[in-house]
Image 1 (cartoon, helix red, strand yellow):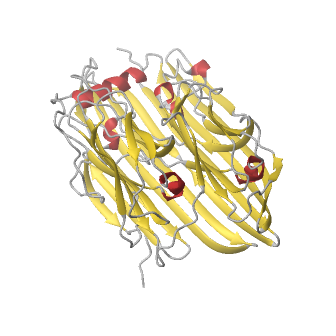
Image 2 (cartoon, one colour):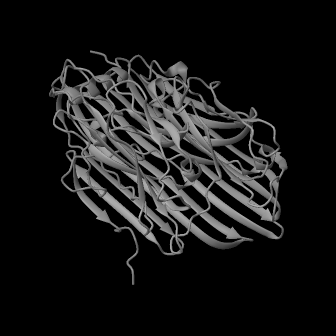
Image 3 (spheres, helix red, strand yellow):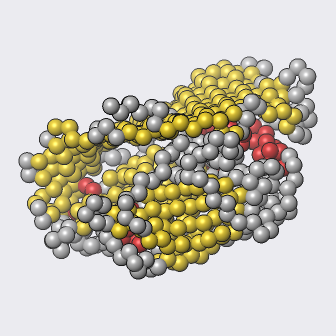
Length: 571
């Protein structure tokens, strides 16, 4: 029997989710779990660190409690600033708790909006008949403090099909904690304005390369800095974009079209202004759901936005005229969901700054290359497909601040490369597809004020290695063998006139492997395992501060949690 990978994926999720039928979720509620992963638990686990907290006593604002997301609609929420903690705040932390009742349910996208600005984005975990997963997420949202100063309305969104078949109910809590500033916990410099680039209290759907979400605004006349925090999430035909190949060979290779290259483009008034890479997030139902139990993929439950530095455009944006900020996804193939927040800083003294863009060498679109090295015979197609895109650009502008003319130069290299190896039988079985992909951005921002020049170097990289094999066994059954290695690397260093000042370096990694056996008629999964996975998170800085956590699991249960194993021993 010939079967396509898309069919197998759907069969696999249905079989795992519904191998044993469970009743619905009447009267269910959120089950809060410890913030530190627990050995012996099958709840979703991540090696990411908790948000560090100031020593002051926080005020807590509840956005919703035990909210049931068991319909296909947005849930309105209201927010009122805490009267006992008027600010300034040393830190603002968003806390989220989720529970999915045992039964059958797919992973769902989860997002939270106030004043149409996104304050959380992620996905949910899948349940099983014998597992009701619960997990905790926390997020530092201090940079959105300007949003929290006034009352807001918004939406909590988890579109969930809930019926007698898909009977896993999703429930959630959400609170904001405001930590007052004092002499020991000073308030950080935060944006003075937050301008959403999204739908109305929702993400925006981008179906093709030409689709764009835009916001047109007239901004204050005294801007000094501007950033755009961008999230682009793959959906539907684009969910597995990193497995894509050119359309002309998609059929014979049993995979997706559109190639394996995607990139987010940022524009101002229709002209190229910045680039954001697309993270190859894998959701808990992706490829083989057992790969992500209990250790989920990198950032699966809590997406991190990519920050685009638009400061060279701050002077132009301050000219008093309306300007349009837009985002699109190159090669979007129905479809991506996109959301972004424009973060703006204002001069504390001058009511009008002014300035202009001096240089912008960023092209409107990337020009990816594709190399097909395939051999097709009567029995199989074998070989490699490579797609890549690399561009280097400079954007430079100035602002006339109260301290004087400040010039900002952003030099960036955006580099993407995907190498895929195939061995696909004409009958569809056996089938082998191995992916080795790296997306990286290296940038240097130079801020010049008189004779002082601050340099900030940043590195962002999200490598993905994925090996997939599907074959027929001698007894007529079929085996699916998958291994995944995801990494997210972020580093930043600062210098003043060439003299090093500070540096930080963070690496997160998740490795997982699993083998599944299908019955001869593909009606069920006959055997599972062994599933093995590990995760690690290491964060270090130039002051000697270090934090690390490593996790290990086997047979869908956490077997080890070790903190600070990868940090140098303190003397």
